[in-house]
Picture 1: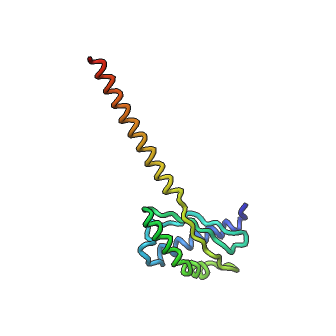
Picture 2: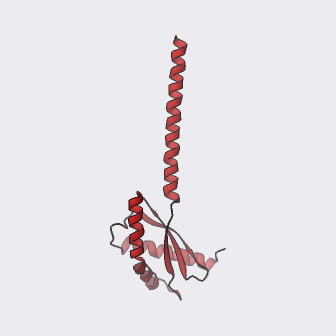
Picture 3: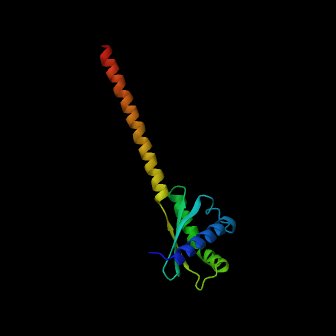
Length: 133
């Protein structure tokens, strides 16, 4: 279970990284469609798992992953400057697919509902036609 201190540090790391992404990163790949969802700190605060979300297709997600890995040193340096910790944590960027998977599931559900409605209308039309004969 996470300690209160590690949760506070995680929140601050997420805030600093989000601010850095928004205001300091000039890479067009890391645009407004990228957001940091959650940060989980190790018990000794030496490692930060940073979960991010990307809106876009697989090509966009791959490009974002590459850009984040290239920007890793810059993000860590910004953390070191803005946070007063004994050790600046190592950052590990991990894609959080829950939003994209939820969106995909929503699309599937809407498709099935539309197919069911179309099937119900077709059944109603067939029943009406057979009654009229």
